Length: 112
Image (cartoon, rainbow, N blue to C red):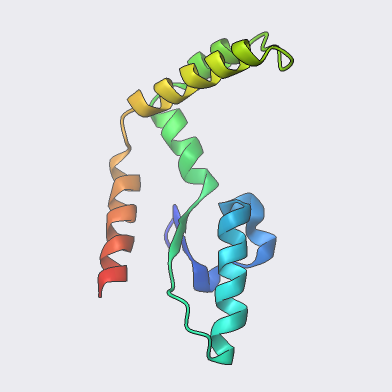
């Protein structure tokens, strides 16, 4: 089993902490409906662990914490600005080779 990828056929609704709500729901639909003849494509989810790996390997978590320090959730402009800063930080992080490799391999498997 891949460290950062889970296939819908292997995901249950209880896997929300692992792959998020939408992916857990897609996995549950796939697992429940395909045995009844309903044709759904098997896809894959990138795990929450991969997100944390990106943050840690890119060494951006400390900067994210600085940006979020003192956030005022009642000040929409401040909230949006800090959110934009976090997005820019994530987009600028180097993408870990092992994560990229697993995602590319999963896409190749879909094409077979």
